[in-house]
Image 1: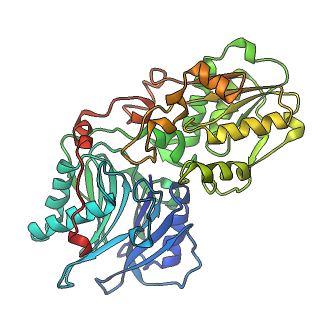
Image 2: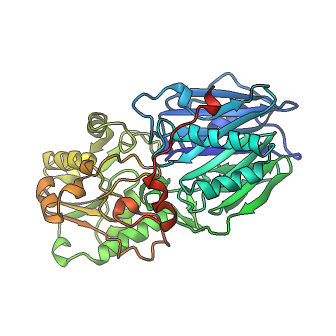
Image 3: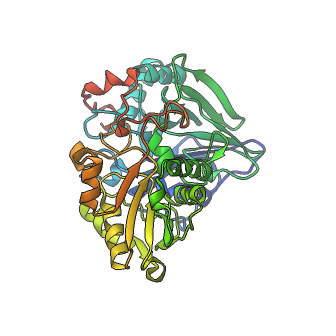
Length: 456
């Protein structure tokens, strides 16, 4: 999981500046905070320039104006994390020996079993095939879709245009927007202006962005919508729009679905419901409303910026545990003596929920019940989520009864894959125990070497 952004100034609009690009990129900061970067072409030029930094997006940089088009990236590491350097930060840039051809690429997703750097692998593939095809971008990208099934959403800057590619399974989200002055593409809808017309980039689709707008170039004949379910449960901002529905409302419905299965014994006096900030709040409100229980935000996040303190995207348990201790504040007066139902989006390694349980007990909670409106995470993911081994997963190691005892809570409940058969469609959900799509299964079993074509 990362976040990507593309913007192109139209003939009718004014050229943009670097500050604006960085502000738009900041809107999807929750998708990654390892590094951020922008590559851009200025008006009356074909040379690609770039700005890269480790850490959070900071927009108060020396401004660059008269930008014709730009692509940007926020990084959440799923590969190469241990020895990560700024050179690996995206956008990646390549120029041929003659310095007559420039390419820049940003990538959201993960290519399975690629040694070192999967985004570099994609850039290498594209550069080689562009040379073989004599610079034919469409044939190169269509070949990419056939040869590499998943997972990627890509923005490719080449020949003063931006090419938009989403893999034929649609594992990672991608949207585009047109206004009177600009064309934009982004992993989520948050960066788009209010007056724009928004559409989803289809799985297996290739688009071209230029000063005349966005042009549809290609649709793969064997594509299917298998959006990663983890995107809907956790990664996406609650304000993102998916299939004309705000993610917040979709999560509220899942909270209600979880409440349908609730037994009467938990609904009693002195019971309150709280959603874990911030992605658990919608679920908690839906759960509480369905059971006519009071929802009280007795757990609050220290930083109000969505995603700023996300512990899932940290690199190791030591970092996660430290972040968990600093992440929340608790309203002890409203917790003391209460039965507290804690609703969180997912349960992965258990670091966050263990810390919350401990703090609630210290605040005097009488009973603690954990409710998770998603299935147990029981498997690794090779398509964009940083889960390396099954052994690090709480629910891979324990049965429901064992996990309840291990967490030292009064009850624990999840939704199941069967509960979610209509949510919202055929999602990719391998980490929840669902089989890989057939077109990906064979591909992930092979290890691919990194060619040095683009890093000579």
